[in-house]
Amino acid sequence: MTVLRDSGCNKPKKIIKSFEPFKNPRNIEGMIIGNDLDSLLSSSFLKNLFNWDIVGIYDYKTLWYDIDNKHFIEKINNKKYLAVDLDIYNNNIPSIGHHILAFNEKDKISEHSNSLNPNLMRGINRDQFRRKYPLSTILFLVWVFGFTHDLSNLSRKLIWLADSSYINGQKHRFKFNVLEWLNNFFKDDI
Image (tube, rainbow, N blue to C red):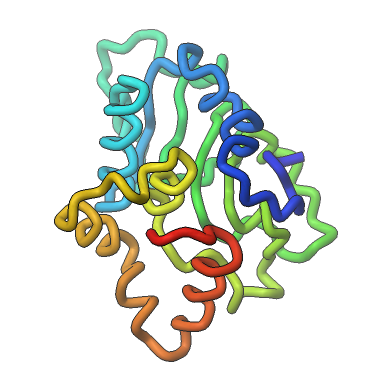
């Protein structure tokens, strides 16, 4: 079962306690990130919070890492690396992401038992695509760790650029979904 699957949980403290990398950050030795702004901002945030370094970059085709890191694969298999802004379909890699992972409500997706994903938390699957999480991983992280009011105006504008979060909030077809997530899940001024 994925972290807080179908729970509708929107309590940051419970989310932190339920996700092993946040509950025991000393067990994580590095991050594997995607190749976009959201991944970079999210990993920078987590670096400042937990001092985790980036050890690999995944571009949806190739996993890039330092060849001198002789224990890279071993550490992946021992859950020492966190995939950030990536939903990795491997139970040995804890991940945080926001993509649609389940096809329908009966889909067990047991291989994602170490995945923190707002869609899975709210029970949103492909059949409810219009309700999917429309924002970025960095916005989710900022909310989970309670930094929504500590952001400078410039930082707030930058994180709203990630994954077109700001644009999604402006477009008529996504606006109501963005508002639904902000008002009914986050219940906070992000």
